[in-house]
Image (cartoon, rainbow over all chains, first blue to last red; front, side, top):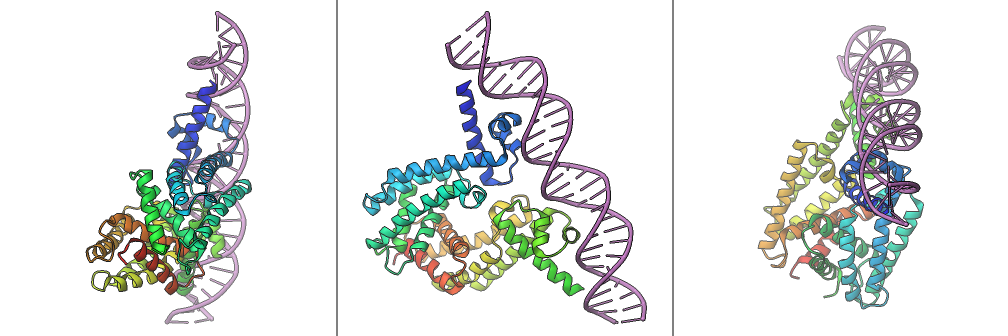
Length: 181
Length: 181
DNA sequence: ATCTACTGCAACATCAATGTTGCATTTGAC
DNA sequence: GTCAAATGCAACATTGATGTTGCAGTAGAT
């Protein structure tokens, strides 16, 4: 039953993330039904609705953190790291489509983690500026926002584009749009 | 009192749009309180919560339609029309930050209007492709998504940037990112 | 000054979501 | 086969949001 429990928990989290992304006010009953488990089972795993949300956020943050680690944002050459980051983060955005910025306000711990990850990416963008991959007149914060927007767009509005091609599209639009080439 | 009523109604719509953008499940009580009117007054104006949402959407669609008209997307030169559209649509996005795509599912009439407006913009993007302002290998749907993403980003994450400068930033990133220049 | 429309306030009914508990049943581990 | 953990099911209490109504007060139009 250990295996069953783990499988169900994971299913609830993924289903919950999907439904909550479409409608943040989705009821726990709807999530439970979509995940194929009873409503009370969900309540036994997660004390509150907030606890469920926290678990979803944590799962997304875990995945994102792994991507940031493996992209080697501080060591690898900018174009290489950028592409590796994109190819990794786009599936994460698709699997956990919840908007972390909006929904984590009431979870200070998760917010702090998110801030830390955000800072890592901002540092990378700054490095791209410093090393001349972006035009000198480009504001780093704007560059950062553009990158996030492109990722969200390709991840959610073009789910059929596979990660490598999606990464190409985003990197191309980003480096051409704000870069020197 | 006609004047009072109209002013209060407008205030409720704007306040509601702002709160609903932050949290789509904001209660009518919270909206009424933020707008400085009694809860029952809101219920007297809008039969349902859905009616309130419809009114917000309609207000946004009205503003957006005016922008589309005045931009002369089919007649003016592409760069001119683009800039005029951006300078007009960014304030609209800021004043009505509600996400029309997600929240209008249950309002077929508003959805249809939104589709029509979306089609006008898509047609314009297609013209930009045909006239050589965008690279030949760029998918029109992707270009459209990029433009929307840039507008949302500058509108909501950089509220301090005034519309003309914001339009410059978006047009620059868009035309450089996907264009031939 | 009067009338009308609008508002705030209080009270009420309703409903959906949340969260809890007890019990029978299932299922994997040993 | 036995045991323990987990689940489904039904029932219940609680809470917050929604929507309604009656009444008194208020402000603008005439």
